[in-house]
Image (cartoon, rainbow, N blue to C red; front, side, top):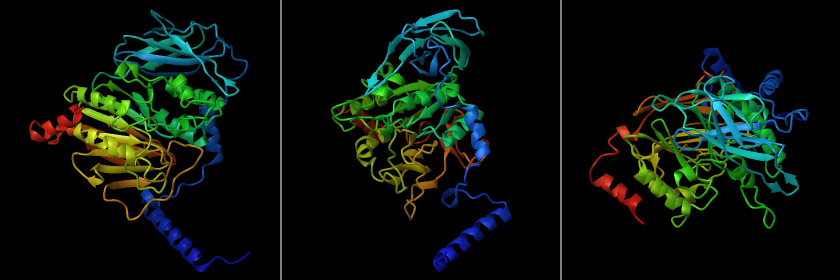
Length: 457
């Protein structure tokens, strides 16, 4: 075996010394210097047993509900979605506030799709409600089968949101889901790249089975990423699978497309934008966004949060510049509306920026977070650009998830938890003040200028 080059020996020695020093002092290694250790096989196997992601056993009845997940569907309503292999199963949901006692019933709609040689099962969408806030409901899909339960979000603060992007279906995905299961949350937000099916439609089915234990219990609010496109020129249009399986409240929010929408929960107005549909100033999405922002009442919803897939502020070498055109078009609107946070995925690493606008730190800009590190099969984006931009506060290439606990109208606590640690360990931890409680929103000439931008044709 040839001897190692001298520079490599020195590099290994320096790296080993640094980690030995950290271990000796008990100081944790975080940020760009952190090197993710290989997973323990027994640990991965145990996690996979908690969240099986193969298809359901063939012995299951064709009429049994599969891939059950829920999402908000307007004020005090919830959409229940599931799949059956039996087309005769009705799209009905029986529900109530006591186990096995169903005092209410709702009927909905169903759809299906074909993609090349694949044909989906019957996909059911049923909206139930009105529902009480912060209440556990028990429900049954299709008039038979197992009982599920969910808890509705609260009507006021505090509000707890789990956040994860670029999820996929790997052992690291399973670890992420297991961590999320341990944290108390009212809802999960996912800024794109769900199943990583990438044209192989049966992987949408396995993904639905994988996330069912969590997604049937708390509402999952998602937007699309590049892995949802699945467009084949001349053969298949884009987003067929995503739109059929993950119907979001776009109609309820005045949108013409399932690829962008908004909703309100407790005291937060949350906007899900589409990075892969038109966003220039002549597009439907741009016009819809302006109209939606104008309607926001910061006294009723003091927190204004935006999610999209492609990050606008990214110091990782991966996907550099891909969000620039969307940012040039839409960032002035978000700034004029005093958006508090912008959360993105796409880059398979974690990064948090301080409040920023027009590529410079700005106390009235949004806090930008990239969290495309849910566990996808493509691996981590380990290379960051140096020197670090002035707006970048924390960055690390690890798998993990985020938690946003909105305590009241002025304060929220953001934490990021990497998979390698126990769930309660916070690798990144920061308190965020709402712009609604700052001097950025005030009556006067500046606020009138902001409204003018949003009201202009």
